[in-house]
Amino acid sequence: MGSAQVTAVSSNGVYSFTKPRRESITLLAGLGVEGDVHAGVTVKHRSRVAQDPTQPNLRQVHLIHRELFDEVAGAGFTVRPGELGENVTTEGVDLLALPVGTLLRLGEEALVEVTGLRNPCLQIDKFRKGLLKQVVGRDEEGRPVLKAGVMGVVRHGGTIRPGDPITVTLPPGPHIPLERV
Image (cartoon, rainbow, N blue to C red; front, side, top):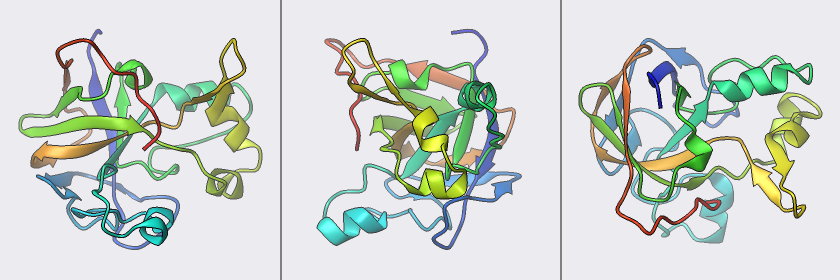
């Protein structure tokens, strides 16, 4: 996979679509990003809380591949790290191709287990009109392809910074493709 690394980290203690970039963030095992509004054992995303506030939080950490920003730039959209609400911007990892249960070591200590795909919402179009169409593609059969990153849970805490290496450990097979969580 080449040299995979963290290119940016972001968090926000209040609900908003974008998250300010930080020099570092600390991941807390079983909770998510310290001080982030989406951290917790149970769901924190408003739409999920409205459905069932007791369901487990499989969306503790949101990761987006920096390469997506290059892709949408080709369609005329400028997007910077944190602006789509992600906590971790990566480079050199095909996040969307990873199976459920993949472990991502971020830096020296932090370990995130990939749980599924981010389901892009209409807030993306409120951020930049027409961008939602760019982050939801179609496969050969016309099925939606969600490209707005992956979600995960923190298995081991630690502080992560831009420039930290990412190590990918695939789960034992057979592999289960990612679906929206």
